[in-house]
Length: 90
Image: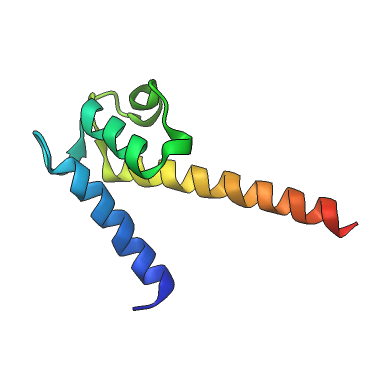
């Protein structure tokens, strides 16, 4: 499997690993989201994550809300990389 394809499947797998623990298996409740962030993204763990990620206000995070969060994190890391690259390139 190609690297990017594998990354996509890994993101799907991680989301569903945690969303399947309680209630709606297509959404993360507060406890599931907290556990996912603590275990899988410890540098991004925050107590107010649900408020930040739950864009439609339904008290849960669906896959689209989750993937937008992942996109934001990836964009921030890319921006830091570019900033550091340009800083040391001079």
